[in-house]
Length: 221
Image (cartoon, rainbow, N blue to C red; front, side, top):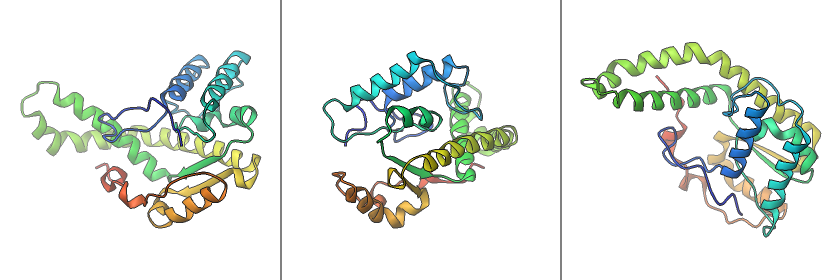
């Protein structure tokens, strides 16, 4: 299946890459900025009604991706905010939701912030920066980030999951598959059988062969 010609590359926040289609990422970011929301998608506010022009841009991208591909898809977490629009523009689209609990999401976002903070600190030229970060600065920054951002990220998590629940209720049951991320280790074959049973041509690869445990940690401190 085609998941995009240009995927978001790896960085300090995710060393293996994000596998997000940059065409959708850029368009989502642009529209979010235009309507007054952060382009990161980290918002507790719903997406307001879009202009006809922005809907045309989304429809145009869907049409472009559909040309020459009988099965394709994309990944971008911001898509959750756009689900009401995509229900209108692509009512027959299937949706695969990898559910992550609140704690995992907060740890993931805080760890990303810590990696960015570490990179900046190590480049600051401070004496013994690596030693100071490992034994002092990191724990202090982690506590600060958790204290300052946990409530905000909870509101973001609620917004995204509310959009997902609304979508599940609005589409036929067979159009939306939900799986907990922890279940992928033990139920990946069942998920693949479910997708191929609906007509998708996919080659099964055991999730354990591509799973990197350290990237799924829930420990930020």
